[in-house]
Image (spheres, one colour):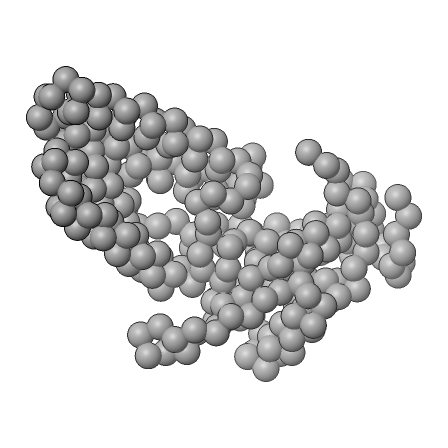
Length: 97
Length: 155
């Protein structure tokens, strides 16, 4: 197993985005509504941060219709997972954990 | 390793790590599937494997269609209940349960096929199907327990 190189990532760093990445790192994908509920922010705030993560290539956004309802699914990309792991490693380095 | 980011103090970094741990622990509360999910999964697998005992290609194909539709339905139900999907083949400690399933599946299916088709003991695939159905239900529960423990940082 390759050790993760600690690296501060300014895109991941912002608290709502760090939380979003942390949740998505633990699953394959998650509904936008579930992420919003877990993070505890409004639709518009989450949308803004998800857009920033998407622009950085860290998150993919997939829209689908299920039971005549529009669903939005979020998933971490391999680049997003790498950046998140590196950022967490940096936090651990700082704390000496 | 030197960080190329802004200076961050130990307290702030520790708080962020604690928040991440708390989020994962919170996630652990909602990822576990209901018991009937595993029962239905077991019935689908048992039904499909058992269908080989009919020695009828059309019935086996029909059982395969039912299996695939059922798995798709279970996936939709899990998404509806939890609001997420977690691949069974994800990397991490849960791989242990996946390996046990694949090895067990190959051994039981192989043995049942030898009895059913080699020794012509009719119904062997039904027995194999029941064993595999119970097996997947138990392994699915075990997989979920490992996953929850991982989310809670207990591994």
